[in-house]
Image 1 (tube, rainbow, N blue to C red):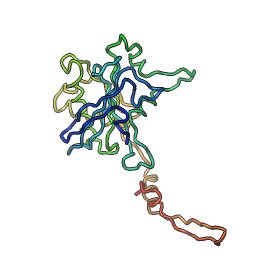
Image 2: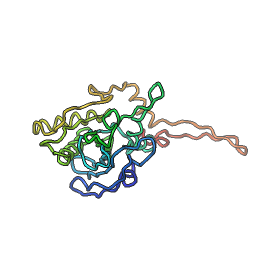
Image 3: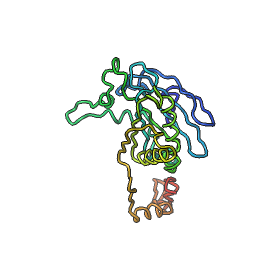
Image 4: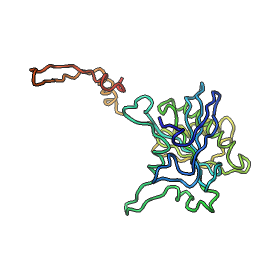
Length: 257
């Protein structure tokens, strides 16, 4: 799990909901060269509740030396198996997101995502987008549970952005893969409970399986069978004629269980 204190300041934890926003410097998450951001960064911990597993939220501000939300871009991360299968995937963090959006075009020039979002002149641009990245404690949790955390984050953003819900900028939401389903469900639940409560003008989903993810039944059966499959491994040495060992794939790859 990404260490929030090392990457975006420190944050205190409460049992009832959100913690206190931590302090940070003026560089992007981790301060790593290659994706330095103009504004400051903060982190906020949302403690687990009966409705969700909790998670960290990272704020990367768009304006020069600005430490408040003005124009939120809320990003819901995608399917992340790092909690249940750390040997397969490390946690997908805000650092990974920032690194991935600084990509080279075919002509070799660097595409700056933040510049494209209106952050090209931070000294004069006070309406640049502010990144709000949701990093779930359990990236494989039930969509409805992660949506409950998403709703709580949206409510926090609406209550704390400049101008609030009266005169503040409406949110833009980006859902990555499963995050698109989480965001779609969360926004719909908020609107059903109280129409207009999301204060969100745009939902963008990237590679989200809105019609379901089709995994061939044969492949599902193969994975289930592999967990209980034994392999014969012939091991020999200079002083031995060889020994045949049986290895359970479920022992080698516990993630198959």
